[in-house]
Length: 103
Image (cartoon, rainbow, N blue to C red):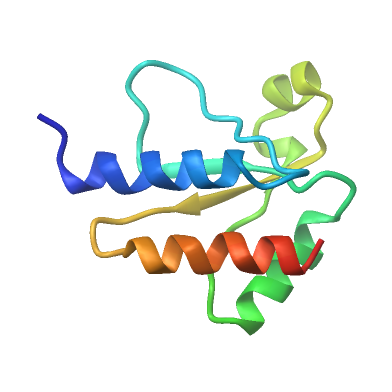
């Protein structure tokens, strides 16, 4: 049986996968609450700043933190969003709306 800490990030991954220009980069059969994605052709630091203006917090993972992964995927940065049990579906929808609006 899945608990909220698994369901909420799964909904986030599904929702982000539906946003043009976003590719979710989580791998494996047992995924955590961290949902990792870049926004195509937009600097992750700019996206992070725009989301922060709306009260949405994400991090920016740079190449030196995960060099092998970044080299293999051709990415220079990704944005991990740490989804917690207390995050709501409405907050996930807000994240997706803001990402669409700020591309």
